[in-house]
Length: 153
Image (tube, rainbow, N blue to C red; front, side, top):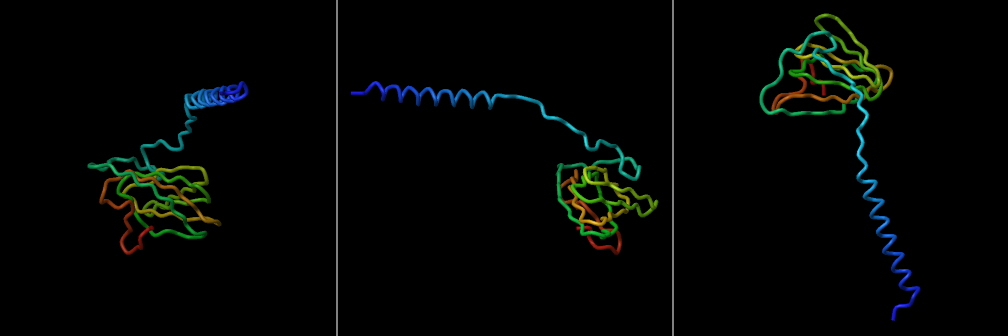
C-alpha cells in the first residue's frame, strides 16, 4: 500500500522533473542575433595595390597562428592569393620591398596582405602573435620565399 506521504513525494519528483524540462526548453529556445564587428573589408592590400585575381579550383581556407619573437624580421616573401592578418598581441610592422612603404599594425587590428609583392613583417619589443587566414586552393603554398630567402614559417 502506498502511503499518503509517499504519493506526495512521487508527485513532487514528477512535478520537479517537468518544471526542469520546461525551464530547459525555455532556455534552449531563446533565439538572438550576435553582435557583428567588421574587422576588415577591403579590395586592396595594405600597400594600396588592388586585388586583381582570385584562385580558381577547389577553395581551401587555411588559418594559422604565427608567433614571432621580439625584435625579429621575417624573410622576404610573397603570397599567391589574398589573406588577412589579425594581430592577437604585440605589433607587426609590414615592409614592402619595392616601394619602401611600411605600416604598423597593432593588437586588435586586421590588415589585408599583399599578393605577389615581396614584403616582410617585423615584430616589436614583445612577441607578436598573429592569426592569419588564407583563401587559397589545395596544393598552392600560402607563402613563397623571395629568391635566396628562407621560408617565412
